[in-house]
Length: 293
Image (cartoon, helix red, strand yellow):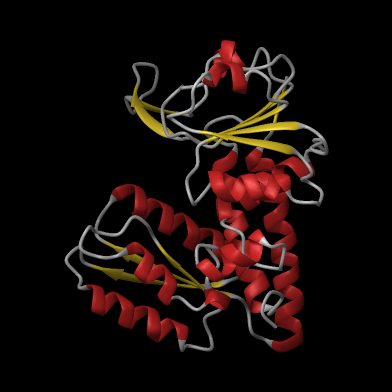
């Protein structure tokens, strides 16, 4: 069994991005600029946005955070998006999800200009990705594809099972793994909580990508000997083994499954670091006008 070290891969990618930023700065003086909108005081969302800001600083990006109270009106939020859309200095915009119930997530996402939608959630970017045109790919699937490529894991002709069908991970992941590209060219099956005979399907997978959102859902009997296992889940659970009283676990029962897998991602330190660095990659592309010219 080999660990796919997301920390190490993301660190290499950050070094590559930082070197490119130096070249850009020397050429025209304008460095990539990422803006983030955060609504409310959710600790996990605050931590995530703060980590994005730190990552921007590390690679030499400019970053801006726009914070709003939980009772902000939908109009105020849309006005903020319009303001950022119209700011030529800002290359990429993310809106931290989920938003409060009184705000329509999709309405806000669709209000972001596709060329600044570095989260890859706008229907234009999703559509472009679906038909194989250049697009911003949502950060977690983008990161997983980079992990597979940089770990030299063969995907062509492999049986890939994706556990989870969300718009953020499962659906785009299925399209990327099936595309005629490298990584890609896999035979893809998408499963979810209503799938019958689930263990029978997952145990045939050469590559198993798990994003079902349930702690330690996947056990050893669900996994084929020698499979590549990508664990997207992350859950904070009580633990008597740590000083904090909590530990992070994934959607896969790591201790069991790692004994059968040829490659596996740990939690933490696997997919998580790749998500943030992939967002940086999208922002770099936005600053260079690589997708929309």
